[in-house]
Image (tube, rainbow, N blue to C red):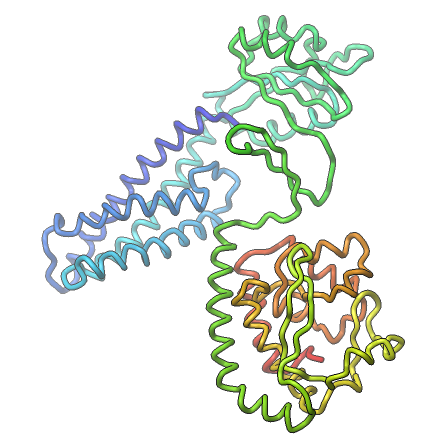
Length: 470
């Protein structure tokens, strides 16, 4: 909450980090000398700190280890530091390979990574404990005066009380709502009304005034801001425009000029999305290579079993309703789409999706292709083009989307995938489209790159055991 103090703590933390990293290399060198194998003088190895410092700093920033870490568990802290040392270690090892591949001790470098992880972990734990101890003892405390005596003000007070190590203390409340003046609120004194705000700040020690008002209460804050500015008091405002359960709110500046309050339901980390795209490209290339190997056999089987093309392209809707041609190996008769309406009453799914176990339009070879999921191999081309992902939600047809209820549409707010949570959750047992959508929304709301990897591994198992295929 306190930008200036946070900046100071960050600078101190960076300086200590550099000391810990340097100490880790010295400690690694000392330990390495205890083992067989000659080493050059320590000075010959210190050059590695030149790339280590900026790489570690960049990765620390990406892992938000220079933000407040007081809410992180020891496990979460360890995982983030492990991520730093894994990626950083690979990057620095690449530099060593090109600069000093023959003379730089590999054992020394591995010991350096180990000690760097241990010392930095210990440092972060101790720093967090020390700052918490100092703040709980009443040192370095900032005094808050909260304007408002309703639910949001109560919630802000509760958060401050629950986290005394934040170094914040509520000195009282100012009533902004009409009606009789309250004596107290949330176990604190109500010091006066809104029109008395500047006078109150002169009478009691106040570092910051926090406006915490409901959206239906319009206040000409500029009148009070001028007076508080003259007193040198920091003013903050809790944004409380709308109460929406799914939307996440993000305050930012457009071109560093216009303040923008954004409501979004997808909170996807840009770094993880980049890694997801790399995973998609690698997976697509592997899949296309598999197609090249199997194509002669699959194409011959399709041609011998049923006249018509080998591939079947169908218009599907992808991210935010973008249309694209989704490709499969043909598993049905050529005129299958023309006969779909005749089978509508035999749909085994409830809702905007068609599924039929013994669909007469499916050819004999097509049943095998579907059972083994080989019919979906051409979709790796869609993945390579960026129209689909390896993991996502099932891409629907425009006709299916036309039957969607409003809440169904959020399932196409991301890029569709070849596989997904529904496919690995026993899709043959799911008979209600609403249940399919709930699984898709569960995937969207909890997406991480790790979740994609787990779904891919489960998909391989499902395909190998033919469990859930239709």
